[in-house]
Image (cartoon, rainbow, N blue to C red; front, top):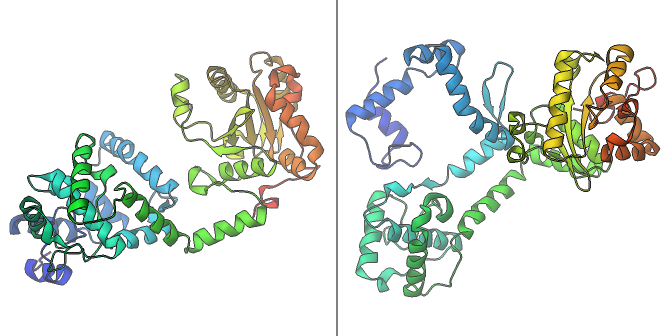
Length: 423
């Protein structure tokens, strides 16, 4: 594929010498390097799977070890942006930008990103100038630089040649910059930057301000932007409809986990998405991302959610399920939790192959209790049952194992998820 480099650059960048949106092009690369980059990007313009597989093959990413490493390396970042509802994944694993993701992208597209290692010799001083200029932009004021010392004047002029974000008089930014004291500046140099800000504020006769607030101001602006999206307005309406504060869907791996947390909140239980808070309290690796939900106030209960595809419609206590129950028993003991509640989207716990076996192991599983969706639906419609559930959640070891299985059969009441929350 041939491409005219100069034409391409002019079409994309116009007369901008230091493009704000292309990483690595703040200082224009050599023509050879630019051609190499454009050749790479232009060779994979399609988003279909064939082009993706060709990219993997060309860059020798096809072996299983490399694929697994790519997955491990990118998963934390992808999980984070998913929890922020910035992207979603389809059934084939492709990442798709969400409505909120587009809003965030458009918001930050207005910002000129600056990195600390792009600054000149006196980086702390230049950092202070950047932060004061950013504050001036937010306050919509021009900074009178006539009273600045020569070293400040020189630092400002150097910055203006590196980043084309000032007006021709160097008194005000022409656009916001993405540069903050707490994110971009090394910790051991922040005190020096703050000292420069204080000195500059005196020279410029500025009202003292908190440089850390600059980061928060942009976050607040972004929050206001996101509140206008349909996703967020629908979320507010859902809160109002149910009369409770609903947790964010993005904090859960599945809809079932999210709806379990909501259903427990409807019952008045302080259910929260698990955020790894018990990871350091036990040596069990499962604490990295388990359980799905936690109940925390006077009661500390781990909540694990199971679908029928995991445990079947009629649950039987085999080796796999028994092993999982034992792991959670150990987990609860390690962190001194009151109990572990398994919420199962199933029809029944098999009378012989589960209930009878569970009762035999009751002493070794004395922190475990289980319920199905139909029972939780019954508790919502019949609050007299709620007191008994809370009692067992608090001290499950005080009751007989048979009393730690809360079940309502489909024949009595289907209690389907959809009867509570409609997708």
